[in-house]
Length: 433
Image (cartoon, rainbow, N blue to C red; front, side):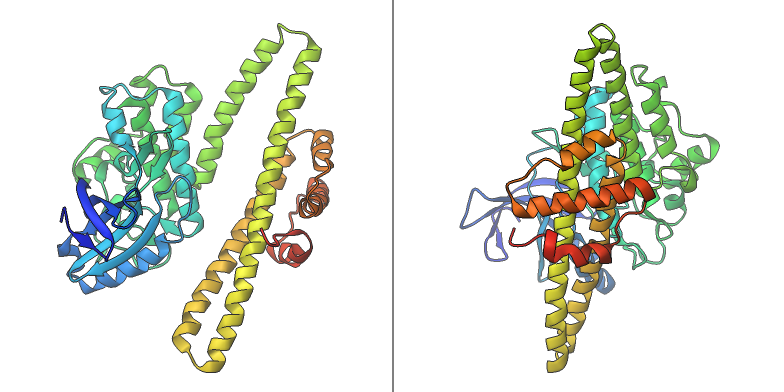
């Protein structure tokens, strides 16, 4: 297909790679040549199946919801005759698998490996919040750009949780060495904790340069999983911290109930390890200095951290209000469409409204999580940061509301609900911004 122009303005320049689902090409925009895309063309033996074609469009709509800095953005999807295409954001970098191979089987430095995997976990958590499973998490599906940022890609066999799986007739699909025990048994009978297991395999591989249960077939990997628990990564790389090794082994527990119950919990545990190590180093250094210097540094760091949490909470509140506004627009449009008898449009708008409501709940959850993080800091410092003046009227009202919510949460551990936050949007939430 190199040299062809498809969809009117996409010129295929070269082949980037090939996988189980199809080929990926580098394409440029005919009118804006500087604009580059990764164009994925699915294998025709897959697209000849009518059920697969319908599933392709269903999944493409689901994946279009994935807007996160650690996920390769899907821009468009279409088909030309028997060829089905996904237009993806082009990432100038290399797969994590290639980066690991370049180290000659020794694994990446712990700091680099953790940084990449934490980005991958953040992207997975975004997908899971939208009830989308990846189902093929592996190092070759994690792109690392030139800045070192992880970009999760290839949701080609993802499925909407509770919906129709990509596999037909319960067929087991995926890459054996990265699959959870339950996925090896039945690809359709899994939840997000299977992705947690696969992420643990990727972290093990990044740290050690090898897989915990190597094998090219389902049977070979499954036999190892049944016979042994996951090995300690420090056997292959003694430089790994004990706490990091324990996190890896917890992610690789055969029983999903014993693993991290989500990628957010997995990520938070890794971040806490770094935080604990940093705090230990800081305290050790401060023992050699005057107590007053230690207190000044500690206060400065706390204030900065609190500001970061406050900004995150404000973003969640504003995002909730914006999503509530979109919901109101969609609801009004649905009412008009219903009156005019446009039933297909009514169905489409109902789906959008459901997505709006799900996003509203997610943003309310993020806001509650920010309030919880604020309780980890000194209350006097938190109140001082929240009382700092702001020249922006909306921000001042937002801080005032956040002070009230923080005080209430600190005493009752009850965060405001999504309906309560929505009712406040006209006063303190997103307006024109």
